[in-house]
Length: 313
Length: 313
Image 1 (cartoon, chains in turn orange, purple):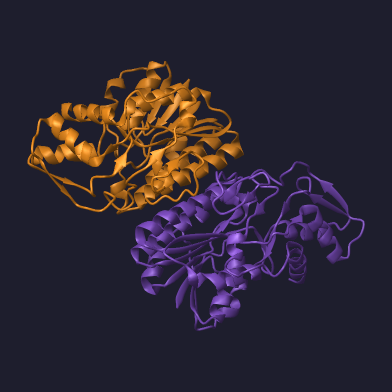
Image 2: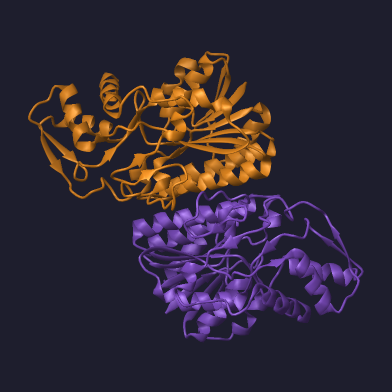
């Protein structure tokens, strides 16, 4: 099958392409290299099953041209702004890179009559549920970040497009995803800071922010086990693990793996690391577990493995 | 207080402006006259409390200029595509006129530190609840029209902007609103068709589509009773009446008021009038009734009064 992966040069997208190529699919990658990097996909450049378009999904006419030429059977939408701290200062980033990219892909699918769609959504659509267990039909959905708002807006578009055009759409709501090819986030920051000054570490918030971290290859397995089962309409799954890791624990793990002792932790204070951050959340995972998938790693194991991967880069 | 009414030359917006001016407010109207008409507001052109900008809200720089100059205290967002049948064939209309207008207004409010926001949302955010009573926290919200999707996406933006910027936002979810200055919809269509051919009437669907119709001045009263009470964060109300009217009954009422007898009704068939239409829905209105407001007219009364208003035009 010919598939299009939007945002395929990014952290998660590039791992997905590896898995899709392994499965024998022909992959069209569209990425503007804003956050994604050609390093993540350069091992595929000579593969006849792989084509790369360095283009911006916000340019509708260019995207339409790619669809006109390639006519993929399945579209995986992995493109979005993924740096929530950054867009907190400039919401235009989310309007363009998170919402408009979804609208343009769905429009191309409508025009070229393409039925199968995968969308990576996020725990941020739930807003702050104040520790309540979030199951897929949890209400009300009140995102507190522009990122969460544009992802939820994208989900709304997917509902309407799927109904109006008989599309088969699969939405995964991810927690924090980590692993090789990661580009930013708390693990990244701590390593960078400790390389600069191995005696002290500034930690945003009170360090008690506690979230499930999912290893990227666990997520990719979950997509690969489920993408072909998708039915008409929209199917939404929370994807993650029940375990979680606090920010202070991540700091300790980074120090441990780097072989650093007696590092002084300084906390900036407050419950959230930054405005729009949800400090604690817990998924209900019954629905995704009922498909047979389960994360192979706990949140702590994923963090350890990611620290090693980032240090080896 | 100086207020800005976006979409103020439209059907609902222009009635709201009349009420705001009556209350003594200074009103800045921004409208591109796409659906709105200068006929709805020309009686205000010599009023020193009224200013009109014939501009498109999708032009961000122009809108920013208006905010920079006028610095309103309260923004009423009444601008949107309101012709759902039309955008079913061209979703770009909703992306631009319903979603992007919301984003641009919220961005201007963020930049110029404006805190008070009113947004007219819609029953279409609920999608097809298959006759279940829809209360404000009903889940899941799965819009089946591009219009509903872009209104729900707008609500998501309002949640994030309100949280991030301490805004006070009030969202009303309207059912079908009718009355003087109406520009399209079933009553309008029936009158037009019967003026052309008073012997026969084509009715979309099976005629059993049954919805609550709300008289526009009841809605305006509801806004005027509640807009000043808005608190930090987002407050959402369903607004309407528990009574409703079927499409076949509307056809009979139009014939009656027009003095037509023995009109042959022809049905196109199917449960919905068009794809994306929700044929039957029922609001839970406990929350808005708890504020003391109640519609003064039933759905049937609103329909009769609107038929008369449209015929008198």
